[in-house]
Every structure is written in C-alpha cells, then in structure tokens.
Length: 270
Image: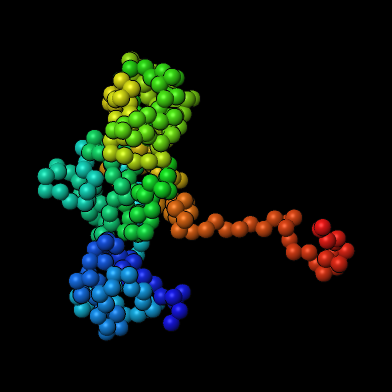
C-alpha cells in the first residue's frame, strides 16, 4: 500500500487526546500496541488508513477535537493538576469532561488568555518558536516608560546572554498615570517570565500582566475564570498560521483561462 494511504502510528494514537505524541511513541516501543493483530514496536511505523489499532488490547477511539479559550485569573497555576497548587487550570475546566491540555503557559501571577486543546499537532506548533505566533499583552509597570526605552525593547535586549526577538509596542495605547505606565506589547517568542524580565531590566518592575491575544484569538470580554469554545474562524486562523491548513486560492477575473477564440488571437510572448 502506498505511503499516501498510510498515517503515522504515534500521531494516530495521540489523536485520541488520551496520550501525548511522546507517550504514544513510548507505548509502541514498550510493545503495548497492535495493528490489525500485529505487534508493532517501531515508533516511526506508518499504518494503513482505517487499520484497527489496539493499545493494551483495547481499540483506540479518535476524540472529538476541542479548542478552548480560558481567561486565567492571577493565582491559578497553568497545569491540569498539582497537589501543591491552591488552584489550577484543571480546576477551571473540570466540568468539560474531555481531556485537554494548556497550550504553553502563563505564570501563576499572570492573567488572561490561555488556549487549551486535545489537538496535539496544533498545540505543538503554536508553542514552537519557529512559527513566531504573535502574543499580545497588556502591561502595567512602575515608573514612566520613555520612548527611548520602548525603542530598545522593540529592537531587542540581552537577557541571560541571548537577545530577545523584536517586539511591537502600540504607542497610541500608552498611558501614564500616578507614577505607572500602561501599555500593550506584542511578542513573537515565549521565554519564561520574559516580559517581566524585560521591563525589570529597563528599571520598570511589572505590577500587572494580562495576555489579550494569541494569533487571531482574543479574550473578547470573557469573564475571569471562565472558558468558551473557539469558533470555526478562530480555529482556522490558528491552523493557517502554523501551516496545518492552506489558504484558499482565489482566482481573479484577470487570470481566468482564455477561451479557444481568444487563445487564437492572443500573441505569444517572446
């Protein structure tokens, strides 16, 4: 059977939403997976579309894909469970009844938009730095942030020996009041506590930090501690951004195929 009629086994297993792709590979290597009655131990195995796949003797079932936007409050840990955390993201979506995982993370003291899904391929690409997905934050810092400071932040500064990627700051959305500055900044990378470290390095400790947007998905007035399903357009925009879908090709009237009559009279280019 040709490869275009096959699919990667560990991807097929992770698509159930029960196991991550890495865990699916482990299951295969450990000899816990059979395909159409055959034991498979090659983690790179490709199997025919529609083949029966058993894990520990039980057939796998592809889960319904769920894509959620959560407005994470401050004080909530970005994990599905943690015995040492007072409150986790898992506590906020427990009623969902479907195993989803956070896409990336927000620090416990940072609030705002967090995506959750059981679509492993999308989650992996959204968090991989090579795709440079935009993330927009609302920041409140101590002191007045000057234009010169914003210029430096936008061009990139050195943190722990590595230059930060260029950023964008909305100059028309900068507000200074009572010794504090509120602004919006867009990142294309996601180092640990990056925004807090950037502003602290420039002498402006962060007092409040909220993520407002990831790619084409916005909070849209979602109350703190609640979640909603992404609509079809939002999911499509994310998949387009990371190359999991291709944009439809629109044929303009100028590029229409000429008729036979027109083709006879149209001169050849030299």
